[in-house]
Image (cartoon, rainbow, N blue to C red):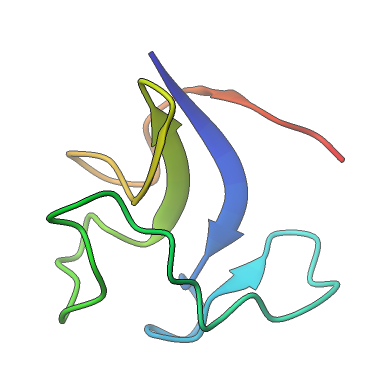
Length: 71
């Protein structure tokens, strides 16, 4: 199961921020193996966890309905 963490680069690709707008989170370095920053595809703009591993985005788009963590 996937859970949205609230980090994204939707407004400015490559500039990762928290959804609350409180602060910039880049450089984020704890990507799941194989999902390191490298010219993300359109679907890889929201930070989520899957099976306890942090990664960039999920297959599909950030419009997917998923559970989320709230601060």
